[in-house]
View 1 (cartoon, rainbow, N blue to C red):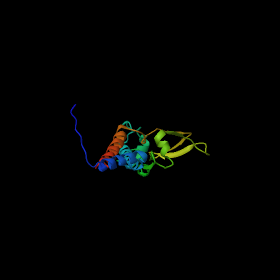
View 2: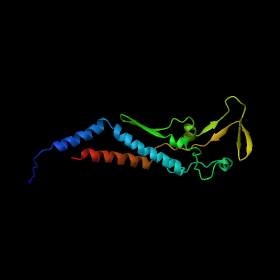
View 3: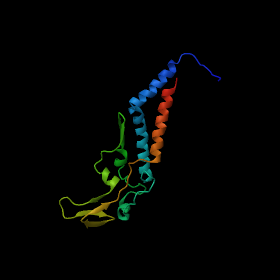
View 4: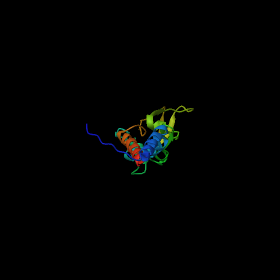
Amino acid sequence: MPTLTVTGDIAGIRQALSRVVAIGHDPSAVLAAAGLGLEDNVHARFDAGEDPDGQPWAPLNPLYAADKPPGLPVLTLSHHLRNSIVSEANGSVLTVGTDVKYAAVHQFGAVIEPKEARQLSFEMGGRLFHRRSVTMPARPYLGWSNRDYDTMIENLEAYLTSAMRV
């Protein structure tokens, strides 16, 4: 059987493999980099007005939409929720989310009822309304999409490519 034997200094290869192993032991740097990409993906969902699966968010109530400045997408009256999206890598855990109090209402939807009064009172479209409850539809912006998967893979490939350089 024909063979080929290669000899020489393999210190560079050992160092590269050690860097790859180090990523496995503490992937927080890879995850932190990927987290920034995932934040961008969530921002893109806000801009497009769609959930992680690419489905459009529920439209605004027409009376509410009439009061809103023209050209602003859904969930972007002040951009506060959109701009509050952050990521955090801790060991092998990556978290992407927000600490805004009303974030869950928009992510999951909710039925809003008065805490102390008999009814809710609010104005839309120049009209005053009194209701026992208001249903907010879910408009998910957090979640896992194919784009998020691609972002994670691209970051891992970049880190592995960098680690494997001899």
